[in-house]
Length: 291
Length: 317
Image (tube, rainbow over all chains, first blue to last red):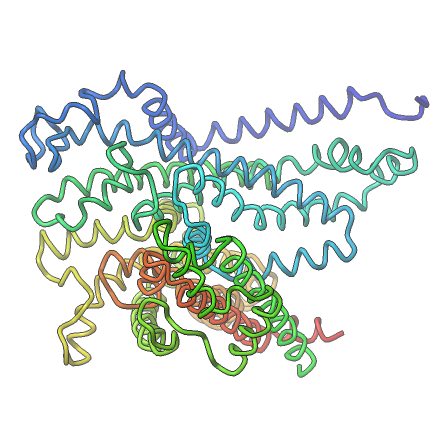
């Protein structure tokens, strides 16, 4: 190593300062805090359904069916005589599992594809970018319905994988734009002159510098994933009964909305609260990283 | 300008071609055996072979694509498996229905959301702005059917003002049709409000911050004139472009709302085609949605360029 190269401590402490600055910004925004509290509540319910649910969401089915909300059952009971509050609280597990995993798959694949196309450029990049434009001319839900039907399987893990794959092009496009800007900078040229391998330059030099983009993309896409999975579930491509799932409950009961409104309203409010909370956090994260 | 138009048109055509390749690949390669995936695991091998023969899905994949794409160019979208009629005959009335719903939704939401965005920008950083912005983010983030359920409960069931399905009785006049379409259109407006208000707000804030606005104020023009002639005239073109792109998305994104209100539009048609494994109809519908999106985006680009000479002249160089 030559002595001209700056000591590695300097940039690292700078990065740490930037990170703590961002966290301070996030913690100051009341909207982000409100969103984070709601998300944390649903994550807690997903992790410990036994602690939060007053009854077993699947097996306690001997209550009088179709009961209005009351002190004993604040959200009422469903047509099978189950406690809706318990089913709503336990229902966060399925949607959180699927959406977090799908977003992770999409982020990992999309970031890799973005790094490859943005750094290698050339024909591969041109062709991939055009294909990405073509795929993005279809709305998310339409693509998802199409692929699920063509594959012929709407099981939980198939849907997860498909949503992850559908997110890949969008994330790749964002990361690619960031990589294009980075690839012009001196540290990349320096690494090339040192004779580093391509994979090293892409994943060890450029990736850390586009990481903030990746973090923003992840939080934003998580909101879209919850949206997409909740919509697919409502259209009948989702978690199979009797497992508690918000969208599946709405799918099952929305035709009974008059007079049994509580069977549909409470799962709908649960979806709304989670999606809005995730988006408030994502919005804060984007602002903190983009200033 | 002509070069700009031709360039955009060529780009749109290339994208459309690639879309047809992707759509074809998904519907013909992913299922493996198309006949088997349509008929299910319990059909006999003879009937599967017969269906593959009838659909031509036992030929080499490139031949199949060329045949299919050749038909598309001549306006042949293929036959619906389930109903045994040309896909276009089923799609046409559905497109008309979806278009009615989309137009009504835009008529409801554009004035309100542009007004909301302008008010938020004029009150930048104050409580009104925060309120409009938060409401916009929340409404745009929610799945459309969730807002739809809440609107159905309030206006359809508790107040009893509006019908809860969108399918009007046969032979209903335009006013009755609008009455039936109001709840689904309101649902879509609620989603769009967030997007449009947000873009308007950003455009107006930029314009308010600019030198020409400061000059206009400094030379003593009343603020209503400044806002109308200087701020809005500069801030609205980007908004129009976003609105136009949203039309393209809205057109295909109606699945959940049309399902919730049982409305026979393109979205519900695609959902039914998926349920019945009617791959030719599904493929035709999806390609149509992509085409509408590309056409609308192309027109939005042109409109934006016409409204903003900087883009038009800059990109012809």
